Figure 1 (cartoon, one colour):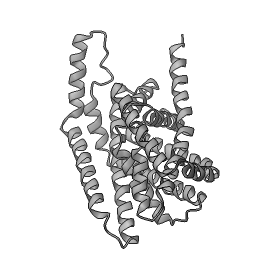
Figure 2 (figure 1 turned 180 degrees about the vertical axis):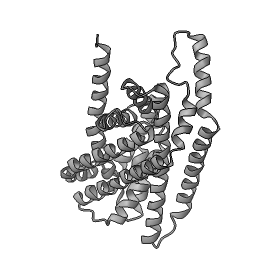
Figure 3 (figure 1 turned 30 degrees about the horizontal axis):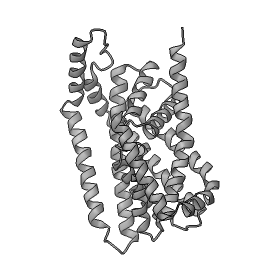
Length: 319
């Protein structure tokens, strides 16, 4: 918790410094100019969440609960990860818990959510590669190539390590740790983690479901292109869809790299400054674009946190 609060402090300070350095008044004016586009960006993001819910359901491989339940739980997952100091992991644990409360066996909920996270990370890598390929096609200046290549190699190695760890028995390690904890705390139930590895290997063997989940996640990432295009158009900055694609894909890659900072405070803004600079878009406009995304994030995330607390409260007071 202390580390999370420290990360918020550092990220928040970096954000304030960036806004002050590039002009709070100019940034605020541009955000106000884009206000008519914010409801549309919220709508687009809800579609992205629905698609992510479909992909999660495909990974778990269960027809029940219904699709609207997966959508609501995916909304809560993202709200917790985006707005609370949980290093992008707490929301996934909340999702596993709430999924198991709705009739999905604990081991299956955990394995399916782990697989969903893996597929989502792989699709983001593919989406970032699409952005780099698009940038290479539309830009004559290749000075950006070395730092982008370095970032992609790091990202690829991290993904490879995560997948290999799963295949090597990462879930077995979690099962073993749970059994040791049960010896210390006899009242602790480990039924929800027993069989995690076997379930994950079974789900990974379903190539058809994996391919469908990959395609749906990739479509969800692609919709972010229209969010960037709408926001910049509202600020009277005219970009092509190809340029918006590059800004969104590389900007979100920068945000993901700052996962240890809650909400990627400061990291997201710095990423957009760098990527928008490739198209001669001023830094204050890049920060304003990030602020529009943050307004959308709060508009979707705060109700998501309330929905989570309402759900937990109902269970707490249920006879």
